[in-house]
Length: 207
Length: 207
DNA sequence: GGTTTAATTAGGAGATACCCTGAAAATTAT
DNA sequence: ATAATTTTCAGGGTATCTCCTAATTAAACC
Image (cartoon, rainbow over the protein chains, first blue to last red):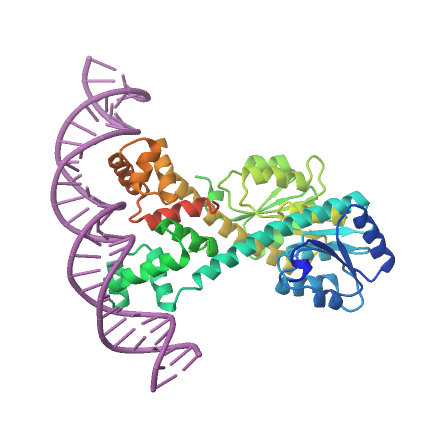
Protein backbone atom coordinates (compact mmCIF):
# COMPACT_ATOMS: atom_id res chain seq x y z
CA UNK A 1 0.00 0.00 0.00
CA UNK A 2 1.17 3.54 -0.69
CA UNK A 3 1.96 5.71 2.26
CA UNK A 4 -0.27 8.49 0.92
CA UNK A 5 -3.26 6.27 1.58
CA UNK A 6 -2.47 6.25 5.27
CA UNK A 7 -1.15 9.69 6.00
CA UNK A 8 -2.56 13.05 5.05
CA UNK A 9 -0.21 15.12 2.92
CA UNK A 10 -0.43 18.71 1.78
CA UNK A 11 0.19 18.71 -1.97
CA UNK A 12 1.54 22.00 -3.26
CA UNK A 13 1.43 22.58 -7.00
CA UNK A 14 3.08 25.81 -8.09
CA UNK A 15 5.74 26.74 -10.63
CA UNK A 16 6.98 29.47 -8.32
CA UNK A 17 9.76 27.52 -6.65
CA UNK A 18 10.63 30.22 -4.19
CA UNK A 19 7.08 30.32 -2.91
CA UNK A 20 6.80 26.54 -2.78
CA UNK A 21 9.93 26.20 -0.74
CA UNK A 22 8.78 28.78 1.74
CA UNK A 23 5.54 26.83 2.16
CA UNK A 24 7.49 23.64 2.64
CA UNK A 25 9.57 25.30 5.32
CA UNK A 26 6.52 26.63 7.08
CA UNK A 27 4.54 23.40 7.02
CA UNK A 28 7.50 21.29 8.05
CA UNK A 29 7.95 23.55 11.05
CA UNK A 30 4.42 22.71 12.23
CA UNK A 31 4.78 19.01 11.40
CA UNK A 32 2.51 18.97 8.38
CA UNK A 33 3.67 16.48 5.72
CA UNK A 34 4.10 18.30 2.42
CA UNK A 35 5.01 17.44 -1.17
CA UNK A 36 5.91 19.93 -3.87
CA UNK A 37 5.20 19.76 -7.60
CA UNK A 38 6.12 22.16 -10.37
CA UNK A 39 3.27 21.16 -12.66
CA UNK A 40 -0.17 19.64 -12.64
CA UNK A 41 0.70 16.49 -14.61
CA UNK A 42 3.48 15.65 -12.23
CA UNK A 43 1.04 15.88 -9.34
CA UNK A 44 -1.74 13.92 -11.05
CA UNK A 45 0.66 11.12 -11.89
CA UNK A 46 1.62 10.82 -8.25
CA UNK A 47 -1.79 10.46 -6.65
CA UNK A 48 -4.59 7.95 -6.70
CA UNK A 49 -8.18 7.61 -5.50
CA UNK A 50 -6.98 6.60 -2.04
CA UNK A 51 -4.63 9.49 -1.57
CA UNK A 52 -5.38 11.54 1.53
CA UNK A 53 -4.64 15.19 2.22
CA UNK A 54 -5.40 18.37 0.33
CA UNK A 55 -4.24 20.39 -2.63
CA UNK A 56 -2.81 23.89 -2.61
CA UNK A 57 -2.47 25.12 -6.15
CA UNK A 58 -1.85 28.35 -8.03
CA UNK A 59 -4.36 29.27 -10.74
CA UNK A 60 -1.69 30.48 -13.05
CA UNK A 61 0.68 27.83 -14.30
CA UNK A 62 2.38 27.14 -17.64
CA UNK A 63 0.58 24.05 -18.89
CA UNK A 64 -2.56 23.57 -16.88
CA UNK A 65 -4.40 26.11 -14.78
CA UNK A 66 -5.41 25.42 -11.22
CA UNK A 67 -9.04 25.38 -12.24
CA UNK A 68 -8.47 22.78 -14.94
CA UNK A 69 -6.50 20.71 -12.49
CA UNK A 70 -9.37 20.88 -10.04
CA UNK A 71 -11.75 19.54 -12.68
CA UNK A 72 -9.57 16.57 -13.45
CA UNK A 73 -8.94 15.93 -9.78
CA UNK A 74 -12.68 15.77 -9.14
CA UNK A 75 -12.74 12.65 -11.31
CA UNK A 76 -9.60 11.10 -9.96
CA UNK A 77 -10.07 11.83 -6.28
CA UNK A 78 -13.16 13.82 -5.32
CA UNK A 79 -12.25 13.68 -1.63
CA UNK A 80 -9.18 15.90 -1.89
CA UNK A 81 -10.14 19.48 -0.97
CA UNK A 82 -8.66 22.13 -3.23
CA UNK A 83 -7.39 25.52 -2.16
CA UNK A 84 -6.65 27.81 -5.06
CA UNK A 85 -4.18 30.66 -4.83
CA UNK A 86 -3.84 33.64 -7.09
CA UNK A 87 -1.64 36.68 -7.34
CA UNK A 88 -3.71 38.59 -9.87
CA UNK A 89 -7.09 36.94 -9.98
CA UNK A 90 -10.44 38.47 -10.71
CA UNK A 91 -13.77 38.08 -9.02
CA UNK A 92 -15.38 36.07 -11.80
CA UNK A 93 -12.63 33.51 -11.57
CA UNK A 94 -13.03 33.24 -7.81
CA UNK A 95 -16.78 32.84 -8.06
CA UNK A 96 -16.49 30.22 -10.78
CA UNK A 97 -13.98 28.28 -8.70
CA UNK A 98 -16.20 28.34 -5.63
CA UNK A 99 -19.16 27.13 -7.69
CA UNK A 100 -17.01 24.29 -8.94
CA UNK A 101 -16.58 23.12 -5.39
CA UNK A 102 -13.23 24.58 -4.49
CA UNK A 103 -12.84 24.73 -0.71
CA UNK A 104 -11.12 28.10 -0.70
CA UNK A 105 -9.77 30.73 -3.02
CA UNK A 106 -7.15 33.06 -1.62
CA UNK A 107 -4.93 35.87 -2.77
CA UNK A 108 -1.17 35.80 -2.54
CA UNK A 109 0.44 36.84 -0.40
CA UNK A 110 -1.18 35.70 2.83
CA UNK A 111 0.20 35.33 6.31
CA UNK A 112 1.48 32.04 7.67
CA UNK A 113 -1.18 31.51 10.28
CA UNK A 114 -3.98 31.93 7.78
CA UNK A 115 -2.42 29.32 5.52
CA UNK A 116 -2.03 26.84 8.34
CA UNK A 117 -5.59 27.39 9.48
CA UNK A 118 -6.89 26.86 5.97
CA UNK A 119 -4.88 23.69 5.49
CA UNK A 120 -5.93 22.22 8.81
CA UNK A 121 -9.52 22.89 7.90
CA UNK A 122 -8.96 21.30 4.51
CA UNK A 123 -7.45 18.21 6.11
CA UNK A 124 -10.42 17.91 8.41
CA UNK A 125 -12.73 18.19 5.44
CA UNK A 126 -10.75 15.48 3.70
CA UNK A 127 -10.94 13.33 6.78
CA UNK A 128 -14.73 13.53 6.78
CA UNK A 129 -15.09 13.05 3.05
CA UNK A 130 -12.75 10.10 3.11
CA UNK A 131 -14.57 8.39 5.95
CA UNK A 132 -17.90 9.01 4.32
CA UNK A 133 -16.65 7.58 1.05
CA UNK A 134 -15.19 4.47 2.65
CA UNK A 135 -18.38 3.93 4.55
CA UNK A 136 -20.45 4.13 1.39
CA UNK A 137 -18.03 1.85 -0.44
CA UNK A 138 -18.41 -0.74 2.29
CA UNK A 139 -22.18 -0.60 2.01
CA UNK A 140 -21.95 -0.90 -1.75
CA UNK A 141 -19.81 -3.97 -1.37
CA UNK A 142 -22.40 -5.58 0.82
CA UNK A 143 -25.19 -4.87 -1.65
CA UNK A 144 -23.08 -6.11 -4.54
CA UNK A 145 -23.03 -9.55 -2.97
CA UNK A 146 -26.66 -9.81 -4.06
CA UNK A 147 -27.63 -11.44 -7.32
CA UNK A 148 -29.74 -9.49 -9.79
CA UNK A 149 -32.85 -11.34 -8.72
CA UNK A 150 -32.16 -10.63 -5.11
CA UNK A 151 -31.74 -6.96 -5.93
CA UNK A 152 -35.13 -6.96 -7.60
CA UNK A 153 -36.66 -8.45 -4.49
CA UNK A 154 -34.77 -5.96 -2.34
CA UNK A 155 -36.26 -3.03 -4.22
CA UNK A 156 -39.74 -4.40 -3.72
CA UNK A 157 -39.12 -4.98 -0.04
CA UNK A 158 -37.86 -1.42 0.38
CA UNK A 159 -40.95 -0.22 -1.46
CA UNK A 160 -43.01 -1.77 1.31
CA UNK A 161 -44.40 -4.88 -0.39
CA UNK A 162 -45.15 -8.12 1.42
CA UNK A 163 -43.68 -11.40 0.24
CA UNK A 164 -46.98 -12.31 -1.35
CA UNK A 165 -47.14 -9.05 -3.26
CA UNK A 166 -43.57 -9.41 -4.41
CA UNK A 167 -44.24 -12.93 -5.60
CA UNK A 168 -47.23 -11.80 -7.58
CA UNK A 169 -45.27 -8.90 -9.03
CA UNK A 170 -42.39 -11.13 -10.16
CA UNK A 171 -44.57 -14.05 -11.15
CA UNK A 172 -43.02 -16.42 -8.63
CA UNK A 173 -44.16 -18.15 -5.48
CA UNK A 174 -44.13 -16.30 -2.20
CA UNK A 175 -42.11 -19.19 -0.87
CA UNK A 176 -39.36 -18.32 -3.31
CA UNK A 177 -39.50 -14.70 -2.25
CA UNK A 178 -39.05 -15.90 1.30
CA UNK A 179 -35.81 -17.59 0.28
CA UNK A 180 -34.55 -14.49 -1.51
CA UNK A 181 -35.43 -12.40 1.48
CA UNK A 182 -33.49 -14.67 3.81
CA UNK A 183 -30.45 -14.58 1.51
CA UNK A 184 -30.61 -10.79 1.32
CA UNK A 185 -30.67 -10.48 5.09
CA UNK A 186 -27.85 -12.99 5.37
CA UNK A 187 -25.59 -11.46 2.72
CA UNK A 188 -26.08 -7.89 3.90
CA UNK A 189 -25.72 -9.00 7.50
CA UNK A 190 -28.77 -7.17 8.76
CA UNK A 191 -31.11 -8.47 11.39
CA UNK A 192 -34.24 -6.46 10.56
CA UNK A 193 -36.00 -4.76 7.70
CA UNK A 194 -35.23 -1.51 9.45
CA UNK A 195 -31.50 -2.08 9.20
CA UNK A 196 -31.96 -3.04 5.59
CA UNK A 197 -33.74 0.25 4.92
CA UNK A 198 -30.93 2.19 6.60
CA UNK A 199 -28.37 0.40 4.49
CA UNK A 200 -30.21 1.22 1.28
CA UNK A 201 -30.90 4.82 2.25
CA UNK A 202 -27.34 5.47 3.30
CA UNK A 203 -26.39 4.77 -0.29
CA UNK A 204 -29.31 6.36 -2.12
CA UNK A 205 -30.94 9.00 0.10
CA UNK A 206 -33.36 9.89 -2.68
CA UNK A 207 -36.75 8.42 -3.69
CA UNK B 1 -52.73 35.23 1.86
CA UNK B 2 -50.09 37.48 0.42
CA UNK B 3 -49.54 37.39 -3.27
CA UNK B 4 -45.80 36.91 -2.78
CA UNK B 5 -46.50 33.47 -1.39
CA UNK B 6 -47.98 32.40 -4.70
CA UNK B 7 -45.93 34.19 -7.31
CA UNK B 8 -42.20 34.40 -7.64
CA UNK B 9 -40.90 37.96 -7.52
CA UNK B 10 -37.44 39.34 -8.19
CA UNK B 11 -36.59 41.57 -5.24
CA UNK B 12 -34.06 44.25 -6.09
CA UNK B 13 -32.39 46.06 -3.21
CA UNK B 14 -30.09 48.88 -4.29
CA UNK B 15 -29.76 52.52 -3.38
CA UNK B 16 -28.74 53.30 -6.93
CA UNK B 17 -32.13 54.32 -8.26
CA UNK B 18 -31.03 54.70 -11.81
CA UNK B 19 -29.72 51.15 -11.89
CA UNK B 20 -32.78 49.75 -10.15
CA UNK B 21 -35.12 51.37 -12.64
CA UNK B 22 -33.19 49.98 -15.55
CA UNK B 23 -33.47 46.51 -14.04
CA UNK B 24 -37.18 47.03 -13.54
CA UNK B 25 -37.55 48.00 -17.16
CA UNK B 26 -35.57 45.01 -18.35
CA UNK B 27 -37.38 42.44 -16.21
CA UNK B 28 -40.79 43.84 -16.97
CA UNK B 29 -40.02 43.50 -20.66
CA UNK B 30 -39.49 39.76 -20.21
CA UNK B 31 -42.50 39.37 -17.90
CA UNK B 32 -40.57 38.82 -14.68
CA UNK B 33 -42.38 40.31 -11.65
CA UNK B 34 -40.07 42.74 -9.89
CA UNK B 35 -40.09 44.89 -6.74
CA UNK B 36 -37.59 47.62 -5.92
CA UNK B 37 -36.29 48.70 -2.52
CA UNK B 38 -33.86 51.43 -1.58
CA UNK B 39 -32.69 49.79 1.62
CA UNK B 40 -32.42 46.45 3.33
CA UNK B 41 -34.84 47.19 6.18
CA UNK B 42 -37.52 48.18 3.76
CA UNK B 43 -37.12 44.87 1.97
CA UNK B 44 -36.98 42.75 5.13
CA UNK B 45 -40.17 44.35 6.41
CA UNK B 46 -41.94 43.40 3.23
CA UNK B 47 -41.19 39.69 3.07
CA UNK B 48 -41.98 36.64 5.14
CA UNK B 49 -40.99 32.99 5.33
CA UNK B 50 -43.44 32.09 2.58
CA UNK B 51 -42.23 34.70 0.13
CA UNK B 52 -41.13 33.22 -3.17
CA UNK B 53 -38.63 34.56 -5.68
CA UNK B 54 -35.03 35.72 -5.35
CA UNK B 55 -32.98 38.65 -4.16
CA UNK B 56 -30.69 40.85 -6.22
CA UNK B 57 -28.74 43.12 -3.93
CA UNK B 58 -25.74 45.42 -4.04
CA UNK B 59 -23.03 44.82 -1.45
CA UNK B 60 -22.51 48.47 -0.86
CA UNK B 61 -25.44 50.28 0.69
CA UNK B 62 -25.77 53.06 3.28
CA UNK B 63 -27.17 51.23 6.29
CA UNK B 64 -26.75 47.53 5.77
CA UNK B 65 -24.43 45.74 3.38
CA UNK B 66 -25.63 43.05 1.02
CA UNK B 67 -23.72 40.46 3.00
CA UNK B 68 -25.33 41.45 6.28
CA UNK B 69 -28.70 41.38 4.60
CA UNK B 70 -28.00 37.89 3.34
CA UNK B 71 -27.24 36.72 6.87
CA UNK B 72 -30.48 38.05 8.23
CA UNK B 73 -32.40 36.71 5.29
CA UNK B 74 -31.04 33.22 5.93
CA UNK B 75 -32.95 33.27 9.21
CA UNK B 76 -36.09 34.85 7.88
CA UNK B 77 -36.38 32.97 4.61
CA UNK B 78 -33.60 30.51 3.79
CA UNK B 79 -35.25 29.53 0.52
CA UNK B 80 -34.70 32.86 -1.22
CA UNK B 81 -31.56 32.64 -3.36
CA UNK B 82 -29.34 35.71 -3.15
CA UNK B 83 -27.38 37.25 -5.98
CA UNK B 84 -24.92 39.87 -4.84
CA UNK B 85 -23.73 42.65 -7.08
CA UNK B 86 -20.70 44.84 -6.68
CA UNK B 87 -19.07 47.67 -8.53
CA UNK B 88 -15.76 47.62 -6.70
CA UNK B 89 -15.57 44.37 -4.83
CA UNK B 90 -12.56 42.33 -3.90
CA UNK B 91 -11.92 38.62 -4.12
CA UNK B 92 -12.03 37.97 -0.38
CA UNK B 93 -15.48 39.45 -0.24
CA UNK B 94 -16.66 37.31 -3.12
CA UNK B 95 -15.25 34.13 -1.60
CA UNK B 96 -16.76 34.89 1.78
CA UNK B 97 -20.12 35.49 0.17
CA UNK B 98 -20.01 32.22 -1.72
CA UNK B 99 -19.08 30.34 1.44
CA UNK B 100 -22.04 31.94 3.14
CA UNK B 101 -24.28 30.33 0.57
CA UNK B 102 -24.84 33.15 -1.85
CA UNK B 103 -26.03 31.79 -5.19
CA UNK B 104 -23.98 34.19 -7.28
CA UNK B 105 -21.68 37.12 -6.95
CA UNK B 106 -21.34 39.36 -9.99
CA UNK B 107 -19.65 42.57 -10.98
CA UNK B 108 -21.45 45.59 -12.27
CA UNK B 109 -21.97 46.26 -15.03
CA UNK B 110 -23.17 43.09 -16.70
CA UNK B 111 -25.20 42.55 -19.84
CA UNK B 112 -28.93 42.07 -19.83
CA UNK B 113 -28.97 38.48 -20.97
CA UNK B 114 -26.58 37.40 -18.25
CA UNK B 115 -28.79 39.00 -15.62
CA UNK B 116 -31.90 37.32 -16.96
CA UNK B 117 -30.18 33.95 -17.09
CA UNK B 118 -28.96 34.32 -13.54
CA UNK B 119 -32.37 35.32 -12.27
CA UNK B 120 -34.13 32.48 -14.03
CA UNK B 121 -31.66 30.08 -12.51
CA UNK B 122 -32.24 31.65 -9.11
CA UNK B 123 -35.99 31.30 -9.47
CA UNK B 124 -35.59 27.65 -10.36
CA UNK B 125 -33.40 27.14 -7.32
CA UNK B 126 -36.02 28.84 -5.19
CA UNK B 127 -38.69 26.64 -6.70
CA UNK B 128 -36.80 23.50 -5.67
CA UNK B 129 -35.88 24.78 -2.22
CA UNK B 130 -39.43 25.87 -1.61
CA UNK B 131 -40.88 22.53 -2.60
CA UNK B 132 -38.32 20.67 -0.54
CA UNK B 133 -39.08 22.83 2.46
CA UNK B 134 -42.83 22.40 2.16
CA UNK B 135 -42.39 18.68 1.80
CA UNK B 136 -40.31 18.48 4.95
CA UNK B 137 -42.73 20.69 6.83
CA UNK B 138 -45.57 18.37 5.88
CA UNK B 139 -43.65 15.37 7.17
CA UNK B 140 -42.86 17.23 10.37
CA UNK B 141 -46.52 17.98 10.86
CA UNK B 142 -47.35 14.33 10.57
CA UNK B 143 -44.74 13.33 13.15
CA UNK B 144 -45.84 16.09 15.49
CA UNK B 145 -49.23 14.44 15.79
CA UNK B 146 -47.49 11.81 17.90
CA UNK B 147 -47.42 12.02 21.68
CA UNK B 148 -44.07 11.94 23.44
CA UNK B 149 -44.52 8.30 24.35
CA UNK B 150 -45.37 7.43 20.78
CA UNK B 151 -42.22 9.21 19.65
CA UNK B 152 -40.20 7.11 22.05
CA UNK B 153 -41.71 3.98 20.61
CA UNK B 154 -41.13 5.29 17.10
CA UNK B 155 -37.44 5.73 17.76
CA UNK B 156 -37.16 2.18 19.01
CA UNK B 157 -39.06 0.85 16.02
CA UNK B 158 -36.77 2.72 13.66
CA UNK B 159 -33.81 1.30 15.56
CA UNK B 160 -35.02 -2.14 14.59
CA UNK B 161 -36.49 -3.42 17.86
CA UNK B 162 -39.42 -5.78 18.07
CA UNK B 163 -42.48 -4.93 20.12
CA UNK B 164 -41.31 -7.24 22.85
CA UNK B 165 -37.88 -5.60 23.00
CA UNK B 166 -39.44 -2.15 23.04
CA UNK B 167 -41.73 -3.16 25.88
CA UNK B 168 -38.82 -4.46 27.89
CA UNK B 169 -36.83 -1.32 27.16
CA UNK B 170 -39.61 1.01 28.28
CA UNK B 171 -40.78 -1.18 31.12
CA UNK B 172 -44.22 -1.71 29.65
CA UNK B 173 -46.12 -4.61 28.17
CA UNK B 174 -45.59 -5.58 24.55
CA UNK B 175 -49.33 -5.32 24.22
CA UNK B 176 -49.09 -1.64 25.02
CA UNK B 177 -46.33 -1.20 22.49
CA UNK B 178 -48.65 -2.80 19.98
CA UNK B 179 -51.20 -0.09 20.61
CA UNK B 180 -48.63 2.67 20.31
CA UNK B 181 -47.39 1.16 17.09
CA UNK B 182 -50.88 1.08 15.64
CA UNK B 183 -51.47 4.73 16.58
CA UNK B 184 -48.17 5.75 15.04
CA UNK B 185 -49.06 4.05 11.77
CA UNK B 186 -52.51 5.59 11.86
CA UNK B 187 -51.42 9.14 12.67
CA UNK B 188 -48.57 9.19 10.17
CA UNK B 189 -50.77 7.52 7.58
CA UNK B 190 -48.27 4.88 6.58
CA UNK B 191 -49.10 1.31 5.71
CA UNK B 192 -45.78 -0.37 6.41
CA UNK B 193 -42.67 -0.07 8.55
CA UNK B 194 -40.82 0.67 5.33
CA UNK B 195 -42.90 3.78 4.67
CA UNK B 196 -42.39 4.79 8.28
CA UNK B 197 -38.63 4.54 7.83
CA UNK B 198 -38.79 6.65 4.69
CA UNK B 199 -40.78 9.29 6.51
CA UNK B 200 -38.29 9.46 9.35
CA UNK B 201 -35.26 9.44 7.08
CA UNK B 202 -36.65 12.14 4.82
CA UNK B 203 -36.56 14.41 7.86
CA UNK B 204 -33.35 13.23 9.54
CA UNK B 205 -31.09 11.56 6.98
CA UNK B 206 -28.45 11.02 9.65
CA UNK B 207 -27.92 8.22 12.22
C1' DG C 1 -67.61 17.62 38.53
C1' DG C 2 -67.77 15.81 33.96
C1' DT C 3 -65.37 15.06 29.61
C1' DT C 4 -61.56 14.23 26.76
C1' DT C 5 -57.03 12.61 25.96
C1' DA C 6 -53.10 9.70 26.94
C1' DA C 7 -51.20 5.55 28.58
C1' DT C 8 -51.74 1.19 30.12
C1' DT C 9 -53.03 -4.02 29.88
C1' DA C 10 -55.40 -8.14 28.00
C1' DG C 11 -57.37 -11.89 24.98
C1' DG C 12 -57.93 -13.80 20.64
C1' DA C 13 -57.84 -14.34 15.52
C1' DG C 14 -55.73 -13.98 11.10
C1' DA C 15 -51.82 -12.57 8.34
C1' DT C 16 -47.07 -12.19 7.76
C1' DA C 17 -42.38 -12.98 8.68
C1' DC C 18 -38.77 -16.09 10.05
C1' DC C 19 -36.34 -20.51 10.20
C1' DC C 20 -35.57 -25.31 9.05
C1' DT C 21 -35.30 -29.26 5.96
C1' DG C 22 -35.56 -30.97 1.39
C1' DA C 23 -35.43 -30.78 -3.50
C1' DA C 24 -35.46 -29.77 -8.47
C1' DA C 25 -34.63 -26.97 -12.65
C1' DA C 26 -31.88 -23.41 -14.93
C1' DT C 27 -27.86 -20.84 -15.50
C1' DT C 28 -23.02 -20.02 -15.13
C1' DA C 29 -18.32 -21.15 -14.40
C1' DT C 30 -14.30 -24.08 -14.79
C1' DA D 1 -18.88 -32.01 -19.31
C1' DT D 2 -18.83 -31.44 -14.69
C1' DA D 3 -19.26 -28.46 -10.78
C1' DA D 4 -21.02 -24.46 -8.60
C1' DT D 5 -24.38 -21.02 -8.32
C1' DT D 6 -28.87 -19.28 -8.93
C1' DT D 7 -33.64 -19.65 -8.93
C1' DT D 8 -37.43 -22.05 -8.02
C1' DC D 9 -41.06 -24.53 -4.93
C1' DA D 10 -43.05 -26.84 -0.69
C1' DG D 11 -44.25 -28.30 4.21
C1' DG D 12 -44.19 -27.32 8.91
C1' DG D 13 -43.31 -24.83 13.06
C1' DT D 14 -42.51 -20.61 15.72
C1' DA D 15 -42.41 -15.73 16.39
C1' DT D 16 -44.10 -11.45 15.25
C1' DC D 17 -47.26 -8.17 13.42
C1' DT D 18 -51.93 -6.50 12.67
C1' DC D 19 -56.52 -5.71 13.98
C1' DC D 20 -60.46 -6.31 16.94
C1' DT D 21 -62.93 -5.58 21.29
C1' DA D 22 -62.70 -4.27 26.14
C1' DA D 23 -61.25 -2.12 30.25
C1' DT D 24 -58.56 0.68 33.87
C1' DT D 25 -55.91 4.60 35.49
C1' DA D 26 -54.06 9.29 35.34
C1' DA D 27 -53.90 13.76 33.67
C1' DA D 28 -55.60 17.66 31.32
C1' DC D 29 -59.41 20.47 29.91
C1' DC D 30 -63.92 22.98 30.38
